[in-house]
Image 1 (cartoon, rainbow, N blue to C red):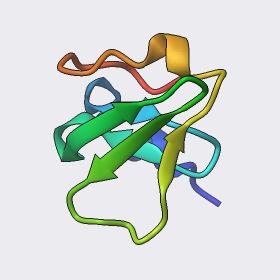
Image 2 (cartoon, one colour):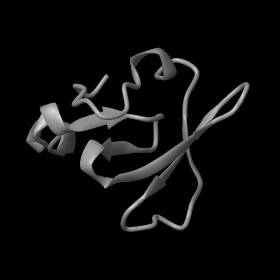
Image 3 (cartoon, rainbow, N blue to C red):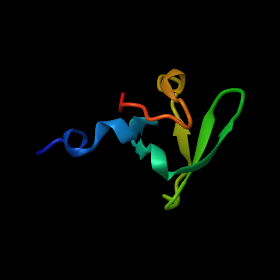
Length: 68
């Protein structure tokens, strides 16, 4: 089975958690709490997208991050 991450433009994507690679251009806003970062995305995925503790240090809003 082909790896979809290899087909993505890695400059535009950030791995929020195991389930969601996120296009940085799709982030409409984010809410940083004491223990999590919640993302609002366009289009809305209907699930709450939380940046994992492992990915949080790499989350740089407003910049393009490689998928991690």
